[in-house]
Length: 316
Ligand code: CA
Ligand code: ZN
Image 1 (cartoon, rainbow, N blue to C red):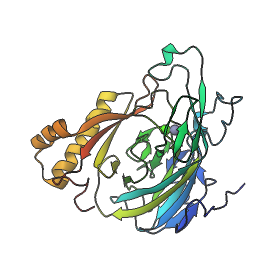
Image 2 (cartoon, rainbow, N blue to C red):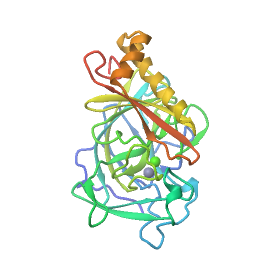
Image 3 (cartoon, rainbow, N blue to C red):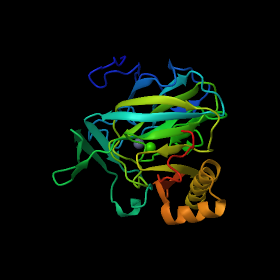
Image 4 (spheres, rainbow, N blue to C red):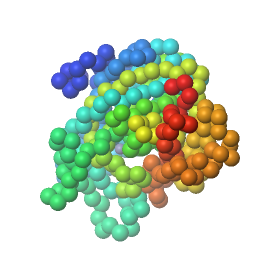
């Protein structure tokens, strides 16, 4: 069933892309579903990470093949984007659905050895408040787990993260954030999904509050600028990402190197002062580290916006 545009969700977008247009991988081989111009505002509808397959307690622990997890809506072709450019995606708004789910997986996550049975919890989301049970409710902080562009070569599943973005699971990738993605192919080929109504640093059980919804984005281009991995900027800080396979220290080192690289290249720090500044003002943390599961772990280095480094790129 084709999902019709609902202008009651967001008015004023230049384009709409329904979740019927989705892939479970990032690849330059996927034909664009939509073509836009820099500066355009796009309403993107996304599935939850299970493509709607988990709906109630009967199927809450269903086994879903890896190649049917994390549908990403796209790809969106941005006219004028060329390899070597940086694509800026600003998340103007996110509207989640009314019901999400979090669950455990066998042998997955920091507390897996303490639980006696596999478990799922449904959450209601209304008027910006998440309700877990009679006792526990908290503000929704919606975000996108998956956002990325076509990788330099081959096809990368929407499960790992990488230089192309992908399953970055950074809870700062929410309303108001701008995500800088290194463009490797003409048009960039942007896709996104895996919305969470809330997700903590580390995502320790392996899921956030997995939920479908609608995203309003604006895309822009920065010509000939680049980092190896994506960068996120919000009102008070900017942060670099580091990704490595099952290696938290390696991921942390990459996030630090990326941040130091921007301080040196864009803001004229010496490498020694960048090292010291990141130690005294930067916050090194984990976006996702579902130890001991296999797969990529994602570190982030958060740099405060001060006069000496008010954005990741000096001309942004
Ligand atoms: Ca995710
Ligand atoms: Zn997710």
